[in-house]
Image (tube, rainbow, N blue to C red; front, side):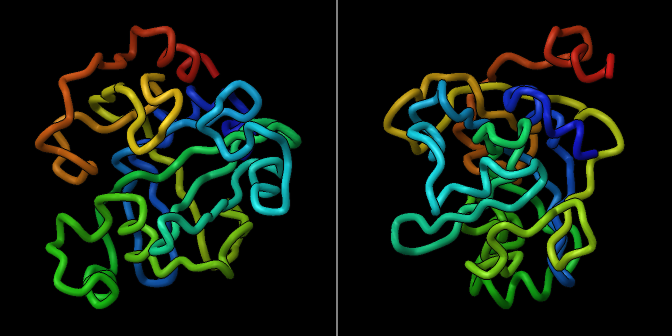
Length: 206
């Protein structure tokens, strides 16, 4: 699985739709992801090179990169690309499929649909904090990532959100017609990635 994460980040992100990230009793099925490259992407934390803050992005693929945002919550990323190349996939939204009661206790009055619908909500539902930064998601540690059995049924593509530069880059991927994406009502009917597209073929030909 780790070798799959060494592909270009814009290929890795759609492949991870439907993957399950698990911490303790809570498991979240990923429904929306964003790709961030390193040296070619001004919106990426890795754009200006390696620092103490973003070092996880430059390490081996398959590790958890967490950063504190808006002074309020943590956002979680999956490191990818060859070691030494700073790339990551932001986990934008998901559906809690196990441990719903525990996720509810962490998310207050949120509806089940909103438990992990947004980057901060997702990490809060999973109970992820600073001490989990850098954890190997493909090992036997407390936070794990399970790849999906196959390609998501409908993969939609659109511009990234919440960034001030390169927002128009079509590197946000989500499962079409899924109510657990971050902004289901306003998500545009963007181009669909099908099994006949070059993006999908690069994965099916592995």
